[in-house]
Image (cartoon, rainbow, N blue to C red):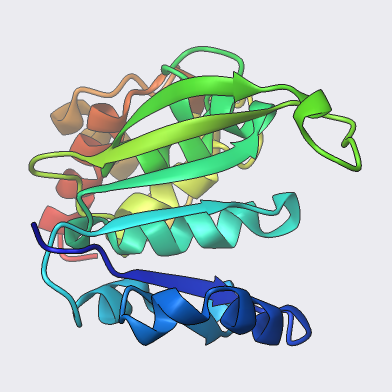
Length: 219
């Protein structure tokens, strides 16, 4: 069978030489490449395109940059067979949250628009040294068939809907795309959206329908 090739991205310039020393055999055999780089600045799809599919993206995501790294993953979804990440437990809950639940938010929508999200298992804080103050979880992201195209209109609608939680969509979306109250109501009606709802009650599909109606108007 064809051997896997691993590209390990490491920012710590002091750690890179250690990795290259300890994994010299794997590097020499062409099974491992250690890339000194900032993970937020790489283009995963470009890196992966150098090798035949299937492609898997994985990592332990630092809390401070989890958002940007997940965004990179979302933007690379079409190049992936799956992504497997270790994240803080609260982030895992947000990623997998169904609509109209407390953990559901913009991160849930943007991720679920392109991935099926599954929390595989919890990793308790005692598994780490030094021990952090929170638990973690492994999440598996599998690309959806026919994912939602996250256009500017889709992103604008989602960000505005969650900009102030528990705000009615009639207020959260007021003034977007230059729509007055009547125009917004008309577009929402065509999308089957009740503007008295709150953003957290809308499913990914409902956000998608609204975005498509906006796009159809050429705005």
